[in-house]
Length: 180
Length: 176
Image 1 (cartoon, rainbow over the protein chains, first blue to last red):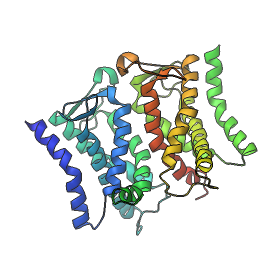
Image 2: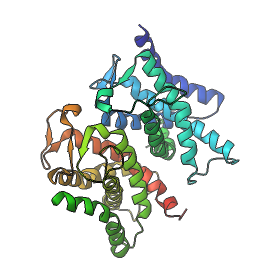
Image 3: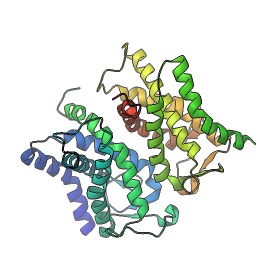
Image 4: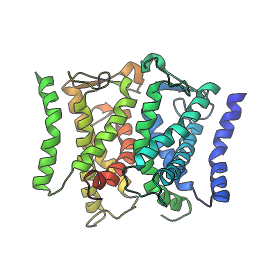
C-alpha cells in the first residue's frame, strides 16, 4: 500500500514541482525536468543489473517510470541548490557558466538533495542494492548511514550531469512549448 | 604479450592522439581528453561490477588508469567525428550553438568510434563482460557481433556526455 502511494505520488511530483517553482520562484523548470529525466534513462539503463526496483509501472525490465521522473526532479532540485550555493559561497550575483568552482557546489548539492532521496527510497523499499554483485566495502557515512560508494557515485555523477541540464534546459522547454 | 602491449599503448594513446590532432588538425584536444577522462572515472566507478579488466596496473578494484585514459581518447574522437558529420549533413561551417540536431550526429558517432574500440578491447582480452550479472538478451549487432545492449548503452551515453566535453573543453585548456 505504501509502495503504491509513493509510486502514484512520484508520478505526480514533476507537475507539482513545476507548479511550485513557477508560482513561487518565477522559474520554469520544465527543461530541467526533461534533461534530468534523459540522464535518468541513460543511468538506469546502464546500471540496471546493480539494483532492484519494486514498483508497478516499468519501462525496461524492473526500471519504473516513476524513477525516471524522479531523476528529473532530483536534477532540477540539485541544479537549483547548486546555483544558490555558488552565489552564497563565492559572493557572486549569478552563476558564472564556465567557472570550474561550479563542480564544488554541484557535488555539495548532490549530497544535500540526492542522499536524503536515496535514503528515503531505500527505507521505504522502493529499491534495494544488489550487494552481492556490488561487493562494496561495509563502511558507512556517519549522517545517512549509506555506503561510501554511494557518496562517491553521486559526487561523480554530479560532476558530469548538471552541465547537460544547464546547457539544454532552455531548448528542451521550448520543444514542449512547440518551438523546435 | 599482446595484453602487455595494449596496456603500454593505453598510456601512450593520450600524447599520441593529442599530437596527431595538434599536428594534422591544428586542434588542441587536451580539454576534450580531460573532460572525457572525468566521464570515464564516473562510468568505470559506477559500473565496476559489470565488466572485468585484465591489466596489471589498477586504480580501483580491477579498473586500470589506461581505461580511464581510453575514455578520454574515445570522447575526443567521437566529439570530433560528430562535429564533422554535423557540418557535412547540415551544410554548416561549424556547430550552431544549442542546435538539437547535434544529438543525431553524436549518437551516430558513438557506434562508429565506440563499437570498434569496444570490439578491439574484447578481442585482445583487455576486458570482458560479466554476462551472468548483466542478463543481456543475446541479440547482437550484425556488423560488429556485439550485444545490442552495448550499442544502446553507447547511444544513451553519447546523448549526454559530449555536451560535457564541448562545454568544458575550453575551461580545461584555460581558454575561457
